[in-house]
Structures are given as C-alpha cells and as structure tokens.
Amino acid sequence: MRLTTVPHPSPTVGDTARPVPRWAARTARAIPLLILPSCLWRLPFAFDYEMGQVYAVHKTWHWWVIPYVFGLSLLSEALAYLSFGLVARWGEVAPAWIPIAGGRRIPPLAAIIPAALGALGLIALWSPLPLALLHIGGIPLIGYSNGWWKALAAAATLPLSLWGPLLLALTYAYYRRRRGE
Image 1 (tube, one colour):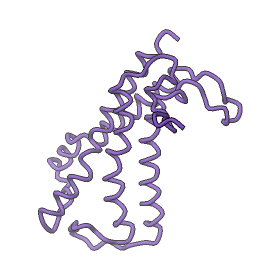
Image 2: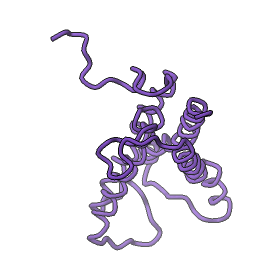
Image 3: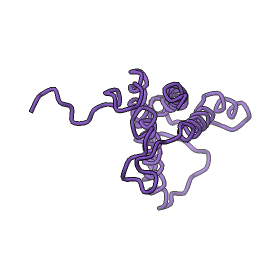
Image 4: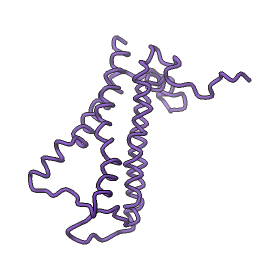
C-alpha cells in the first residue's frame, strides 16, 4: 500500500465534469463546521438548562422539547451537508442507489433554484439587520444573566450569519461551472 493514497478523495480531485475551484471546495467543507457551534449551543435547552438566558415570564418545560431540539440540530447539519452537492459528482449525476433517478444527469436548475432560494432565506433569517429591526420595533431581545453567557451565545450563533452568503457564493460557482450543459 502506498502512503500517498487517499481513502476518500476530496471533491477537488476531479470527480466532477468540470473542475471545482479550490475556494468552493473549501467553502463547502466549512459550512457544516460553521453550523456546528449553534447546534451544540442548542442542546442544553432540550434539558431545560437556559444557558444564562433570563426571561420575564417563567417558561414551562415539556418532554417534546428533547426530540425537537435534537431534531433541529440534526436537520441543520444535514442541510449544511447538502452544500457538498454543489462541489461533488453527486450534485451533477444522481447516485446509482437512488431509485428511478440513479445514474441520471441532474439538470443544473434542479440544484441552483433550491440552493439560491435556501441561501436567500438564510440571509433573511440570520442577517443582523432583521434582528435589529425587531429590537427597534419594541420586541425585546433575549437577556442574559451576565456578559459571559451573552458572549458565548454570540460566539455560537454569529457564524450562522455566514451560512447564507457562503451558500449563495457556492451556488454561483456551481452555476458558472455547469452553465451551457
């Protein structure tokens, strides 16, 4: 066995019809890592640990919060992993194990439209501007018992504001690579 063999080649190795820009492959790898801190931050809430948050009204904990929070974290990571489809072969040709569509070419717009709409939705959801407008409109932002909790919350959730713009950039790179097909 040679030491230079790679058990799982990266998307830049050449498994796509046209070469993927290095920055796009790195961006696709970074997106799930940007989402991970917020997914981990969310988990203690499932067990009624408020992570320093202060509420004006006492909240009642329910058993269904556990599967909801864990499901939300898993769904967030799964959606983040879909960005790999914009830089890998399975974003151009459906994997053979998929019934009916397996082995068939994926039309570029079938990936571009959902990715672009998802990116724009993420920008609208996680942009600091809508959150600031809510605060100006009289809706109070979450309070924290001290600055350390607030800093930890910011460190865990601020990377989410990058998800939409990075996905939009990946979508544009995918469009440029597949245009004319």
